[in-house]
Image (cartoon, rainbow, N blue to C red; front, side):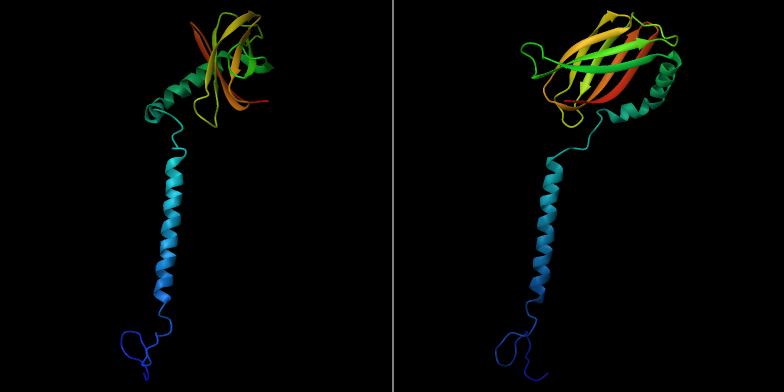
Length: 176
C-alpha cells in the first residue's frame, strides 16, 4: 500500500480515513448505557409492583377463599350498594359521601341483624383508605357517612357478618 505506514497514519502525516469509526461505536454504547441507567432509576424510584401484602399466605388460603365464595352464593342474598355525595363531617376530609347498602335474603325479605362495615380503598395511590361502620336503619338498610380526601375512583368493599353468615361485596365507583 503506497503512501501508508503502520499506526494508521499516511506517509504525509495525515490521519488515515475512518480513524474516528471506533469513537462512534464507543459513543453509541455510552448513550445506550446512559439511557438504561435513567430507566433503571425511574423504575426503582416509582411503584414497587407489590399489590398485595402477604401474597404468599393469601395464595395458600386460595381454597379457603373459594369455599367462602361458595358459602356466600349459597346464602342467596341480594345486596346493593350506592352512595350520595354529601357535605363532609365537620373537621373531616374535604369530600363527603353517604354509603347505603340494602340486604335482602333469598325470599326478598330485608335482613336487619347484621354487623356491617365498609372499606373504601383508593386504587391509584396508597394512604387514602377509609373504613366506616354502617349503622342499621331498618328494612335491611345500612348507612355510613364517610369523608374522602380526594374525588375520583374508589373501591368499596362492604363486609356483613352475623353468627351464621359472612358476606362481602366489592364495587368500584367514581366519586364526582
